[in-house]
Length: 192
Image 1: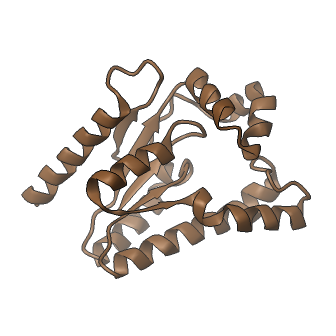
Image 2 (image 1 turned 180 degrees about the vertical axis):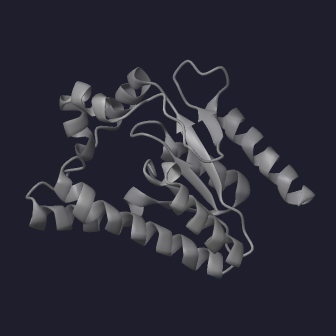
Image 3 (image 1 turned 135 degrees about the horizontal axis):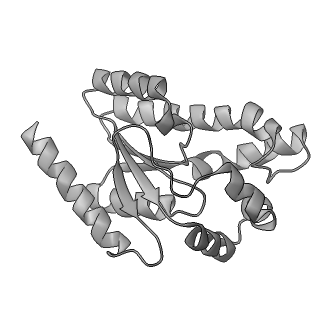
């Protein structure tokens, strides 16, 4: 199980697609799996289907999104299919108890949990959010300084992880970094 995590606009989905293409593993993207349900639920609860910042979303909807994503991941693993889960996972990759529980459950399926952090900087993330034009990003863009005060573009997970540098001025192209990551995973798998 690869958990592809990072802040909004860091390039998680693109990284996940590249990883899936190179490994053949199932890609499960939180937004793809849950967006229509999330928007409908938010419309009923708060009136704003694109809310991703209020307590209504954070406390009432976000946990359901992640539950759906994880359940889909566990079902794939139960069928013998390795998975790539793409979502911010910001709380999760910094929660030692979540990491322990997830690792233990992965072990029951005979697989390992690997965390991939897609790192970016504020300017690059803003540029990506503007270019994708998603309504769920409008609050972030309209309140950029407030949004940045709640997140740290320099943060890294507190658990062991791989880093993909997806800044606009990264030293190596994203595709090269992902290919290198896949090679390192194959070497580890062969050695284990």
